[in-house]
Length: 75
Image (cartoon, rainbow, N blue to C red):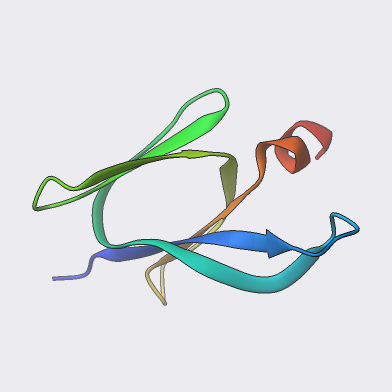
């Protein structure tokens, strides 16, 4: 079974992306993108709501990267 790992892209003090991500949730089976947030859930029912937007999805690595919502509005 291939479940996703969701990471939140870190920023430095200048607001620029560092290229590294902080783990939000592993073994994610469900993800919903809303206006200013992303909802992720595991197959066991653990759910987290993150203020942000989807930056990228890597299907080969089963990784979803989120970015802060400020960046999402300026992109």
